[in-house]
Image (cartoon, rainbow, N blue to C red):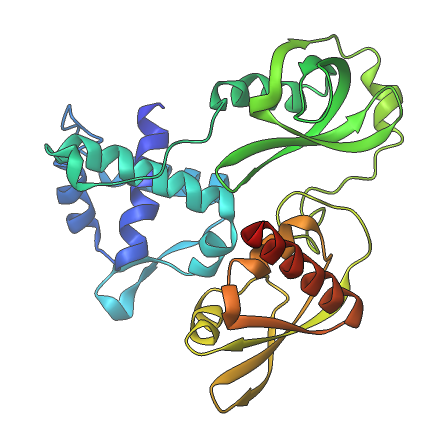
Length: 300
């Protein structure tokens, strides 16, 4: 990452916390861990980099005279809503902290997603609109040669997935990175033919899904969560469509509009006895059947 990019991310990071005037920004930058050469920041350079940050990250950094000529991010919600930028800022912040914290054992993290080394070539393939050939081995089938037109990648449950169209059957597919055993980027000459039939929009592709399974039609699902799980679901909803319907004595009813896929059912079961499905009856019966099978496994 070059000097300008580092400053842009650093500026967004510190201005998220509180507004600062130019002198405060200059002082903090001089001793920032991402500025090891202690390069001074002139007012002219600051304004040039500030405009670059605004353009690159679609934010508005304005000087508020009522706050003593302090600079602030006017549209902070844009950063919160931009998941990629939020991740980029978090990674940048962790990178800076790693330089400052001597004892790394005080920060405990989950393992990094597997096969992350494939992220760069797959993203390059997507941006250059080329086709990729890979050897893919699922848990259910033998390894096979797949010709694939990738459209976007998704990080979900500490696993990377690539979403696109299988060129052999022209169907949408989701492939996990860690099951790719070999990868080769083809020329883009055939990709134009495939692209004509693609209707994948990364922004809303998983809008009605939980996880990465995108099969079936979404349904209105009503659930009842009991104390204290209902409090947790208020803090961290199961899905962005979640709405609270009713509160009773020791329980809360919620509604979500989502595909009742394997991933979603797993999420429901993770709440143990503190959550039940009320509607639709078909999902309620499916949950009951799963629980009976679980009991049978324990009693075997």
